[in-house]
Image: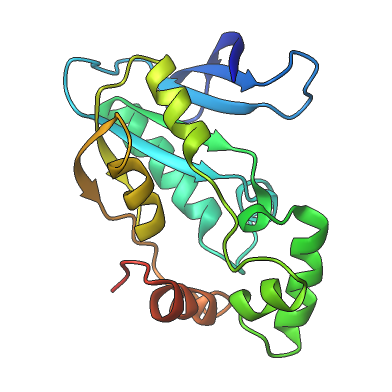
Length: 193
């Protein structure tokens, strides 16, 4: 994983430095780090490791809570100083086309896990080693991890980056995502109320 380019990104939340990472310079879909302007690297840094969700992050889908999680994380990072690591592993690692296929299966009554496994994939195929590499490249030693996902917590806790604490990222359920959030809580162990 190489740091390829960086630039100042003014956003509605505040200014970030956006840094792209990939194995090869010609990769058109790099992983990203967004480092808030006033991030203090001498203390535990607020970090959100966020897996790409084009439907939620870009198009405002109400099927999930991803877009709202990213929005909240960006607000918090801009206000307190922090980093968003944006990983290109759409649909829990199955890609956008298969995610849309999974949506169709969900519309027929399967939950998000069963839809993925019905298509021949793991319930959650995401990996977090790239996020750890990015944080190390940035010089991050200690973090306050903004997540509800126990697999993400475990991956980061078993890394050279120290997880000082976990900060919950709770989004109010809506009619369109209530079943999805319940499945994440009941079957995937996400730390939701």
